[in-house]
Length: 237
Image (cartoon, rainbow, N blue to C red; front, side):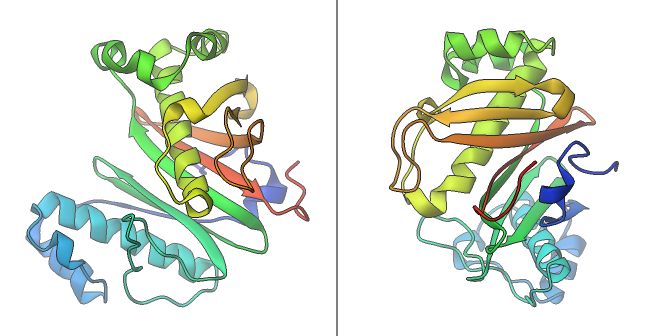
């Protein structure tokens, strides 16, 4: 695979640690992952093989990303009551998987306040027709149309960016919030970058009007989005 998020500013890239792997849905793959020290939560013991292997592959990526960041981790990350991974205290991270691909990203908390990552397969026209009004408001769709990207690709990117934003903010917000809480306010295709702005206050550190940057990477009919918030001492340029 080509370099992830090639347009990401170097000042940010050097703080991010990525890991990815192909998901193999088989008993052999599951055994190999379990033998590597990973564990399944009790809630997945009766899940179908595909779901179990996806979970283990995501945790395997997380472990590798933590290793690259210099953080030792041999077991699966704990799961919070909201079913999100619980990262070590000094790091932030995110896991995502889709089809046969799993990804994880990790950063030290002293560099990033939050990070969220999401991978999606590009929508078909029929899928887009059924979810268009759920993804964005008319003014967002008009701004997306100005990018010159195919509507299915632009809509998939916007959907994925809002998923990444949810993952990035959840640790602070600690509650479910929907796509209407963030609105597309800027999109720069040449930089593979878009900006989402909160339409309502979600927490003391996430007030209405707060802008959040989201970078993206398109490959093999998939999109990968990354929403991140640098610490005040980190220059995002």
